[in-house]
Amino acid sequence: MKFTYLSAAFLLASPILNAQPLDLNLSKTMPAIEKFYLDLHQSPELSYHEEETGKKIASQLSKLSFDVTDNVGGFGVVGIYKNGSGPTIMIRTDTDGLPIVEQTGKAYASEVKVIDEHGANVGVMHGCGHDIHMSSFIGTAEQLIAHKNKWQGTLMMVAQPAEEVGGGAKAMLNEGLFSKYAKPDHVIALHVSASVPAGKVSMKNEYTMASVDSVDIAIKGKGGHGAYPHTTVDPVVIAARTVLALQTITSRELSPLEPSVITVGSIHGGSKHNVISDEVKLQLTLRSYNPDVRTAQIAAIKRITAGIAQSAGLEESLYPVVYVHENESIPSTYNNPEQTNVVRSAIADAIGATNVLETKAVMAGEDFGLYGRTDENIPITLFWLGGVNQQQYAKAMKNNETLPSLHSSKFAPDYKVALPTGIKAMSNAAVALFNN
Image (tube, rainbow, N blue to C red):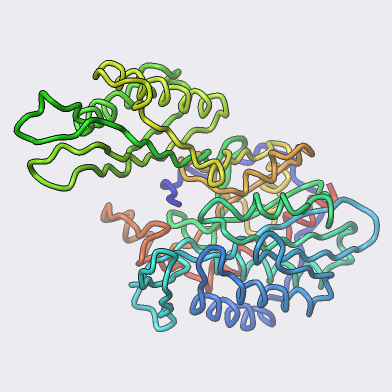
């Protein structure tokens, strides 16, 4: 997922909490956390294959006396720690890597290669920072147990697989995450940012990340010889008309006040210069915040593709097939304003108000949003953890250079600064919600 550049520093509008920040003695615990991070970074696993990663998370939580269940929703892990009566706070991390050959040049760079589901030999890298997430997650668990006299309630630590393919949150929820283990009152998570300096965090209320849908369109035609196009119905021409017509959904059918993206990322058809094929395949990604916009996007795609096929003279049996990958669809992430204000104030108290920035919503997606879309209607908050080396960030801003993005083979977060910041931020956010 990709993040936009941060905006100006946010002036805190929410009330400051009365509780003092936790006194974290990170000098003693960070060497082990950094070692854990480096191990995770050098041993990434692809989505649905996070078996060893899950075991490592489960082992760490067990050492902290959590009641641990593994293999939830695949290789997910749930850790429960009961500390008297009070609310239940869920902290979530994601665990999967990406099929990327790392090119950071770091001495600890991942050299893992595997055979993927298509039979290809691919590199594997934590190119979206999930190793930072998991290490902050364990560091936070350590601190909350060490300071359990500062809070009461149930701490629910959830390590979720398959975020990168939009399947992990669904799988864990479908296995009864909120019924078999605990029903949280608050759900929080962090995500490392490739656009924010290490040592800072950023966040916003309300919509912060988009819904994501993958759509396949099979455009039919009647093939033949390229020298006799009048005897065919050319699906390449129909596809070209379709690609252009789809752009009018956002520009002419949806309100300009409602963000919408419809991108045709792939088009394949034909096999030879002088052969008109029978089919062209399109692959699309759809992005929006408002669920009604998503519904309108999909309905318009089906209507427009059918209309163009009809205008080309095709019978209904040869109209395009529009397939929405519902198993990969994820909703937008909506940060509950009241909860997010509590989180923001607690983090500002812990790391300094000048280090808490306001950000803009992005069109990247995260299946974290699903935890706030269940029947329980639980408030959720996701904040961004700065990952860019401060000197690298300053140089890029001065020279108008583009920083390596998330999912880049060259993305290398400054873990020595990001990790303690993430642990401070998340630990204090959790305590604030326990005591709010």
